[in-house]
Image 1: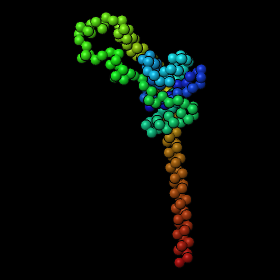
Image 2: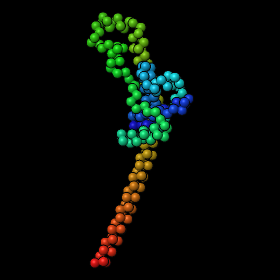
Image 3: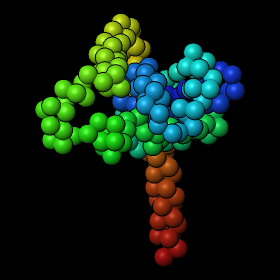
Image 4: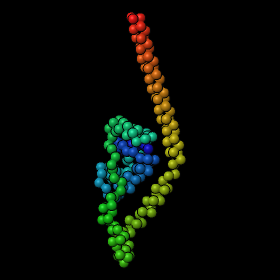
Length: 192
């Protein structure tokens, strides 16, 4: 799981979001959703300033949901960011039903008539191009995966070091407590 930033190079606004694998793929998903006409501030910014004026960067890798939340909160605070959490990237079922009725509600004759209209054809023609674009956009994925693995190894080493440090500090604290208890015990025995 990744925390990533999406920076508007013109205004300097920083959007902070999360994704499973690739921030670049997530950015492509946001661009596709922008074309659907979903109303959200990020889509308005993408349309107004142009997709080319945004920079996507990985912020950090998280290993579980708690760590993801902590890293996300940290990125929001550091960049005074705007959250991408909860931003829709697909149309809901009711919105799709308005655009294209269910198969069961359209007779076969009506289907043929609908396919011949120009309003539906471009949408069907655009879908294969979008799928091809996503599939061909993974040319640098091995490089990204290597970078992610290196970051994971670095962060794991940092966590291990901090755990060892914490264990040493707790051991030192426990030794100090035991020494104080031993010193108290010896003075009590001397008084009796």
